[in-house]
Image (cartoon, rainbow over all chains, first blue to last red; front, side, top):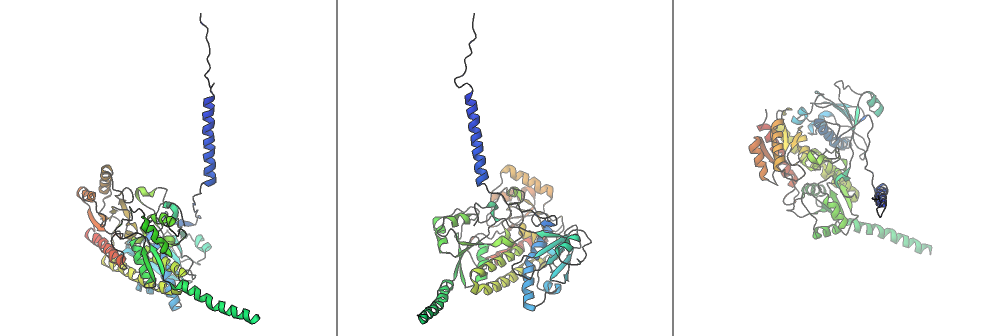
Length: 189
Length: 302
């Protein structure tokens, strides 16, 4: 006749508990360190009426946007020299993209540029499938960034006024660009 | 006593500007990281400042590891001009290890509309950007304007001179682009698809109103494996790519394989990051790049 003898393990299941506790402790420690030391990634949110130049524009529009961005500086310099905002014809004569007609303007929607009052230029796309129409507002202050607006429907009529509210109401969207140099860098200066 | 104080004040007033001048009178020593930036800064500053490459001629910036003597040189500089969006990440480490870890830096691309990186480098939903802004005339002019403005802040006496030089340089560069585009009498249509070996030329072909359809290199400066190569060749055929732009300065044997297997014509472009640093290097090499793109468009128009 045998008698069953229950032999409890020496640790009596405590090891499992200790391992679990240790794991929890490590987790809590790691979570603490991450929450205290971790850096937030700056996602720059954009408003509903804005478009991100890097993600929301197609290649033709990105090219036009960059050219307008560069042209704004030259337009301001020319304006300082002559005292008045240069005409579209003068800009084309300077060979300043996107105002100059060339192979690149042809393949980007063949925009027809007109000057608006208040130091702005309207480029009406002849092919909205390729690229939308643009408005460039050149700020007088040399430190200010150029203001570029885009409208993709074919009825891009001359805006009544150049203030943001009027443009938004008329269906224009502001193209914004942001600089995040730190993405591939180990630390920033 | 009052008279003495006034005399002292006068003396101080007379000597202080002299000290400031002595400090400013020394021409700036400007560090640069890549060849195009040597040309940009040299053209902006003329003979009013000295331009010093951080890495010696002959090193490939894609595979450069900082050396002690290069790090030491940073101690003698006043400011460093950076690409800052991924092509000279080594500069941060060098500056941190140098005698001047807090040296002023100029972010050339701070005001430049950037493109997202393509291929495998495009991790993080468009957060990694394509760093080759120097291969586009438009993005170059934006950078030249930025650099001139920032240098003018450091050296106010020459700020106007820098701005004028930057404008004259921008005008010459615009001329290069206009000359190239004038040769393309008829713009290529949407069927003109372009691929590149190195993910560098998105900005350049965008100046022509074109878009890069495929990139062969799996990552920046990394050769594809045989399996990746086969996939790329199949992809090039499926997309009906008309032209591939390869790398002039870093030739690879596998490029010939691609040409043989896919039948697509290959045109070499330069990355402008090889050889001696010279003032006119950017204009000379960029003209060659623009001519090559024009030739590719003319010879492959459908």
